[in-house]
Structure formats: C-alpha cells, structure tokens
Image 1: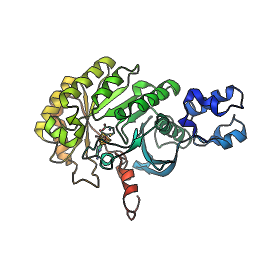
Image 2: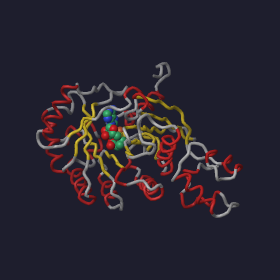
Image 3: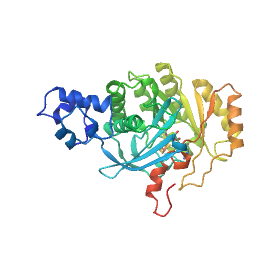
Image 4: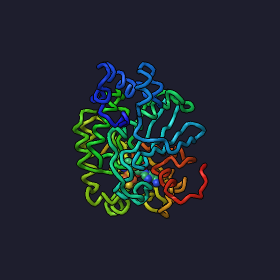
Length: 348
Ligand code: SAH
Ligand code: SF4
C-alpha cells in the first residue's frame, strides 16, 4: 500500500473506494490534525482497515536522544534506501523541528557534511510533511523532556537546500499551513541563497520567516565556501533578501557558521554588520561543527565572543547559538555521515 503521507490530502478518498465518504475525512483528520505513530491508534476506523494502512514513507533507522532528553534525532530510511534526518529540540513550553528537504545536497558548501556527500534525490512534499507528522505524534505520545506536547516551530535547516526543491517545498508548506493548520509565522526556510527561489517564496501568500546562510561577506571568500555564490553573488542575494523582508514585513535572519581563521576576522565582522544593518536582520552565529571530510575547525570561544561583540557594537542584534544535540551529532547531516562511514566507531 502507498504510505498515506505520500497521497495528496484531498485525494485520500481514492484509497478507500469501498468505504463511505466520511472515511476520507476521518483519515485526513488523523493524518493532519491528530498524527499518530501507529495506525492501530486510529480508533474510530474499522480494524481491518487499520491493519492495512501504512502511514509513513520511511522507517526509523535510528533514534538518538541527547541533551538530557531535550533533543531527539531521527534517521529515517525510505523504501529506496535514502536517509532523511530530522531533529526535534525541546525548550520550556516549546518544541522545534528541524527537517530535511532533500536527500543530500548538490551545492557543495565546503564545511557542510551534507554537501560533502553530494546529492541523492529531491524529497517529495509528503516526505517533508511526514517528518512534521512524526514529530507531532512523538511529542504527543512519548514527549520530550520539558517541552510542549506539540510543535511550536518548524525550521527547514536539516539536509538539503529547500529552495532547490521549490515545487515540492511549496506543496509541503501548503499542507503544513493549510491542512495541518500550522502557523506560517512559526516556519523558517533556510537558504544558502538561491535568488529565484527567494523571489518565488516572496510571491506566496504565507508570511514565512527566511534565514539566509551568509557565512562570508565578500564575494571572494563566499564563492570559496559557498560555490553557488558564483551564480548568485552577494549583491543580488542581499537585494532579493531585502525584497523578501519588505514584501512579508518579516525580520530576516542571517546564519553565519564561524570557522577558525577563515570567516571569523574583524574585517568579516565589519562587513557582516554592514549587510545586517542594511537588511535590518538578526544575526545567528554558529560555531562550526567539524565534519570528517574537512580540516576546518570551529572558532575558539574567545574569538566567537569577540566577533559577536564587534558585530553588536555596530547596532546589530546577534545571538550565539548553542549547539543543540552536540552529544548525538545532531547538527547538520552528521548522523548520516556516521551511518555512511565504515563501521567500528561505537555510538554514543
Ligand atoms: N541548505 C540550507 C538549509 C540546510 S543547512 C542552507 O544552507 O541554509 C542549515 C544550516 O546549517 C545552514 O545555515 C548551514 O550553513 C549550517 N551548517 C551546515 N554545515 C554546518 C556545520 N558543519 N557546522 C555548523 N553549521 C553548519
Ligand atoms: Fe547544501 Fe545548505 Fe549544506 Fe550548503 S550548507 S551544502 S546549501 S545543505
């Protein structure tokens, strides 16, 4: 049977043709309003139907819990053996899901584990929505230490470049916002800077938050770290991001991964501050998570502090992000890397 999350919500009736009409509505309600981990929990459906149903288009290949129970990371494996990674982060009264939009990524940013392993395939809209549903069901039935019992935020910051999978991203957003009823304002799409995608997203009806992964504030350095910068250089990217912020009246965020001796200089801090002021953006600094295929190291803590201080001194709001799930390699494609490395390194 086709997993139900791969079926357009409006077409669920087609998979239960011998059932009364309201059956499709019941199914849609379970899938999008009250997600469950196991179809056996769909108690108002006939037993024989429940037994036949397959909900998720993947199985849980690995689940790891870190940060004293506040972070859960899943490695989902699809039927065609593609890995999809998602991380659920609990905070007092809140819960944020970081989900994947592609299996792999073609953009090859030098410091990114996903980029180092190349592109496998696009994720279907249903595969993105299923990550949200799974996290929602998990929060309700198992829960995350100290967090809310439902998702409060969704960020497209897992594997892949969401704006390089635009059609499926758009359909996933439609299902999450219009069918699940999730607030568009609580969704962040993170992009490395696909300018036409930013423009298309600006034309959609939803006030989604945009995060721009900048990492370097001049074209020479940025093209080295983020090869797509050669196609969409800084000036074009900043102009498109500015248009987005104005169209949506939403504050942008700029993501900046701090790499020791590479993009953590005073000069980069000053240039970053200029761009952030022009965009009225909030800056998130993230010390690099080392990856196995690169020699790059995170900036030391005192450099991180000095960089943050310097950008702040120009009037920019700066947050140094804590590395959630560091004890379970939760950041940025690292679980997948581990599963691809030769066996022998024990799990935590
Ligand atoms: N492709 C999109 C979204 C996925 S990456 C993008 O690039 O924005 C999500 C975030 O993780 C990005 O800001 C990216 O720069 C950051 N990131 C990637 N590899 C990292 C690493 N090794 N350490 C810290 N942050 C990393
Ligand atoms: Fe792809 Fe984002 Fe990683 Fe760059 S940082 S390779 S765009 S996932």
